[in-house]
Image 1 (cartoon, helix red, strand yellow):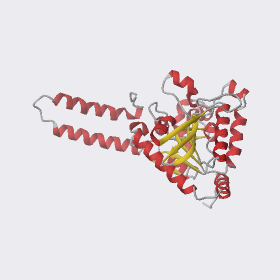
Image 2 (spheres, rainbow, N blue to C red):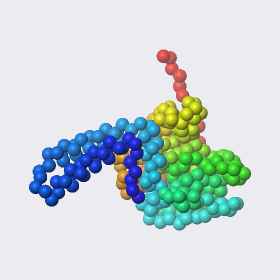
Image 3 (cartoon, rainbow, N blue to C red):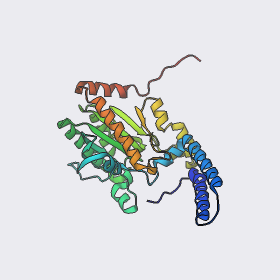
Image 4 (cartoon, rainbow, N blue to C red):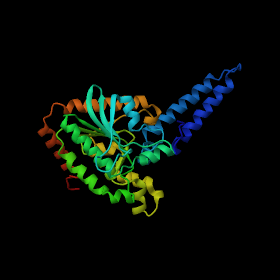
Amino acid sequence: MKMTPLEFEKPIIELQEQLEELQKKSSGQDLNVDREVAAIQSKLETLRTNTYRNLTSWQRVQIARHPARPYMLDYVQHCCSEFVELHGDRHIGDDHAMPGGFATIGGNRVMLIGHQKGRDTKENLKRNFGCAHPEGYRKALRLMRMAEKFNLPVVSLIDTPGAYPGVQAEERNIAESIAFNLREMMSLKVPVVAVVIGEGGSGGALGIGVADRVLMMENAYYSVISPEGCAAILWKDRKFAPDAADALRVTAKDLNKFGIVDAVIPEPMGGAHNNPEEAAAALKAAIVSQLEALGSLSPAEIRAGRYAKFRKYGEFTETAA
């Protein structure tokens, strides 16, 4: 799909267009513009490097939401040699916002579950913009229990603005379905690896995010509330979303520093949408590495480690000034 530049990327795009225009004018004409082309290329490389190495929290949120960013099923295509999708929660129906099934990643048989968004209006309506209903979380738990039965690790790919907040979801008890997943995932006897690949919004993300290893893509974000929602509450105006993103510490770098996530998966410069194959290779390598590390642990060790991991969240030490 066509790449739409983000606001902070426009100076880079303008310089690229200048370079292309200069090269176009010189082609077919007896003009030596090598020096000018080299100067613009050098300036462009410096601008690109400085821009993407110094991204703000809000800019990373924008990259995480980029419409061309790879989604769960894109990564399935690039990372999995096999994927057999399973459907339904055995109570209400199937939720297309939460696909899942048996998969093979780097020779490892796993149960793969995740959020899926759409790229156009038709697909977004089918996938509900990546916002799962209660049946999505109940399907996810059904598949996790199946994985436990067959002694398969669970891999979850998180990418949602949040669970669906509509009347239908409330009628079918969305809060209970997520809370039940939190409890049951804590007691699973098989390894669980969760990766935030884009948006990690509130309980909608956490509903499949209780894992032995929690990873994040470099330009993903993970937060209890969206920056816009936080700004609307604290500043009474959504225009303060960039300030809220900074205050919330939503980026992979910050959350890794605080111990909320265990590792950050690097992305191609400018975001995963600029080179989906490279991003997928990095994601696959990270998942395989974590599965190998967890593979030697007993069920008792897995459960004890997972419990200890989440119990230490929020711990802090006060020291004298």
